[in-house]
Amino acid sequence: MTQPEPDPGAPPPELRQERIVALVRERGFARVTELSERFGVSTVTVRTDLQALEGHGRVRRIRGGAVPPGVVPSERPFEVSARELATEKTRIGEHAARLVTSGDTVILDVGTTTTAIARALLARTELTDVIVFTNAMNIALELEAASPRISVIVTGGTVRPLQHSLVNPLATVILEGVNASIAFIGCNGVDPRGGVTNLNLPEAEVKRAMLRAARRRVVVADGSKLGEVELAKVCDVNEVSLVISDRTADPAVVAELAVQGCHVEFAL
Image (cartoon, rainbow, N blue to C red; front, side, top):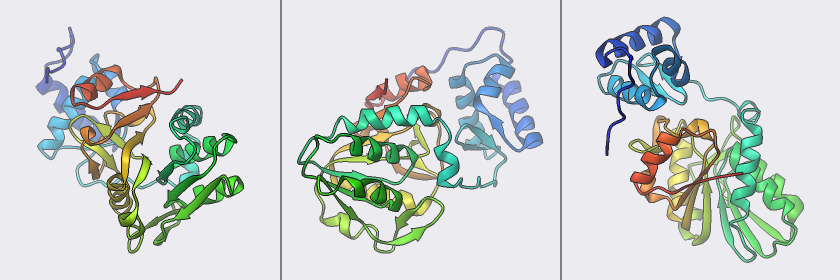
């Protein structure tokens, strides 16, 4: 893979990285976009810097930027995340729902973007004989109004109130016997090298089971998540059939994903 070209007039990488570490320590969190503007370099260059610094244990990469090493970011409630990039998530949901046809068996993961898919499926009144497996209690309730056109099967498991999700024990048992047409998986990061990742370890385990249970594997992620790496790896990017995102995604990251064999579509 070719490395990004150095930006003219930018500080030398060693000096820039020292200043990045100082900022992260001082503020407790530094955004990729903020660092890009501050040092006059591309966001790809900043992410390369953060990856190098993380490799030496000097920062910890999280969605949107970096924190000091050893800091574990808190998980935001579903209701808080739902307010962020709501328009983009709605468009991604509608784009994803168009991939479903009558008679399909669908796996629908927990998350705000996958909830947008559920709402788009509900609006497609022409769909019939669709079966949806989900580990999201709120999605099951969203789709209840579509019965009997859409039948909903909840995976079961242990409740995580923060995301209204169901996790192990027992959450993956039913998925072992499923051969679904398509799975829609949410995440906190999609990175060419880091893969598809999630902030929460128990939910990542269920996501892996969902991918194994589907013939077509689709990751839905708004543009802010492309190029980010979180705690729990779900899979490599070349293990998914498609990533659906939006035009806020960094074009350089999208190009790197293509090099890794990962196709990205933008919801319009």
